[in-house]
Image (cartoon, rainbow, N blue to C red; front, top):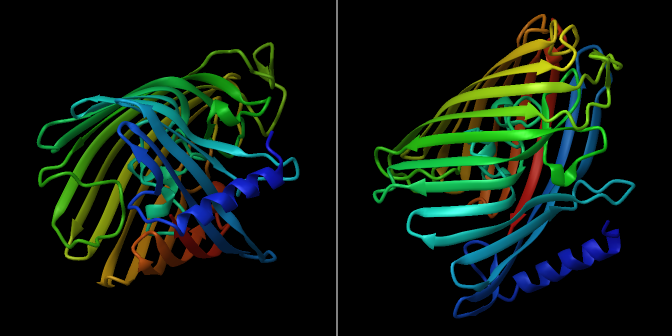
Length: 385
């Protein structure tokens, strides 16, 4: 495990190098023939205020993400990248591994990636946190509620010559952190000892009738483009680590072991004349190892998560955007659907590289409990190099 002093030395070195050069994605510090070295980073300083109805408000100022990365190659048609998150460091100086992969790029319109990476599911999750309109992702992109987080395995991606049709498929190891109130995916690269282990398969198809629309929110170009996507995943517990189940019965009232999870997505995105809109519907089914478990999301060992979100923004000019969104999550174990309405604004110094974001989120029936309402304020400063 890395020591905090070592981590901050690496981060400082990355920032020093950043002022010596400029690049669209990271900073190329060395390049010759097939060899290159690129460094970059993402800093997100966030203020978060939580104000529940009938309770005391709480606030915090912290690094939401602090992610340096190094990418490079010394061989034709192969490249690699590793990225870690210091913002998640705790008393144990833990460091979360994010992207960490090797990639073959020697085939036209096709690539093969091996390592720790995102599976091709959830348009919202596949859109980088640095390119989001709202400060925090909605339910449809939240790994706490059924969107698979990074997996450790292989992913294949391809596109047609016109780039109007793209596809992706992946297979690998993925973990779930048992919690009755969540369906919380995580990567085996960051697994705790009590995580359920299993195998994840996922695939998606994206159709871009007017040309490729990248996974980036906000319309800086003003061109009219839209996309429609279908995706699905299936996760199955390999029964190697069901530490909270004995004789088929859970030993915990709040952390049941998960046996399986399957999800389906239909999503769409539109960009035109300063308007940016993303919409997504997900249905996720999950079962606990204990088929009689009831609590949180689950009823009699089963739950279906019905998830919907739409968010958008309009550029008043290239520096200022007003944004808003609505999202809903319902589950078999809920009394009522958990709904959240958001609105806010973004100010861009240099598109998504340097921006300030303000989001106010109104929550109703938090965790599916009728009348459990909660408002939240997010203020975030972002710097990317």
